[in-house]
Image (cartoon, rainbow, N blue to C red):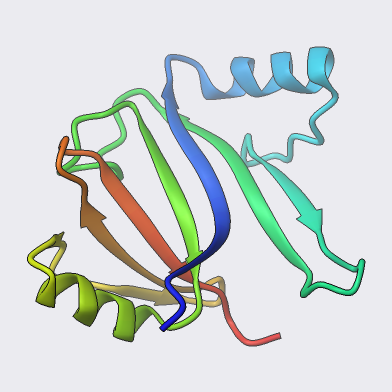
Amino acid sequence: MKRVTGIGGIFFKAKDPAALGAWYRDHLGLDVADWNGAIFQWGGDGSEPGTTIWSPFAEDTTYMAPGSASFMINFRVADLDALLSTLRAEGCDVVDKTDSSEQGRFGWVIDPEGNKVELWEPPAG
């Protein structure tokens, strides 16, 4: 079974996400959208196209809970259900919920140092 297929996003806490997004836009040229994040598109060179998201979150966000870090990495996966089942069988600390939206399906695992890791199965196409 293929596990991780790429990085889907990098999310981190910021004191002022809008100001930080503006800094990255103005100084590093990121195309920061109204939601304070940027989308990097890749592929088209014969590989399957995809996206990677860069996004600062509000400093008081609880989205990364129960992890204690100020960041969270989102990994693209091919089969979320199979991977979560395998991780549980391997004794990993898998969060007991998944979410679905038009962006795809999401699940989470907590690494040995308490970091919440997001697993994302993009929608077909």
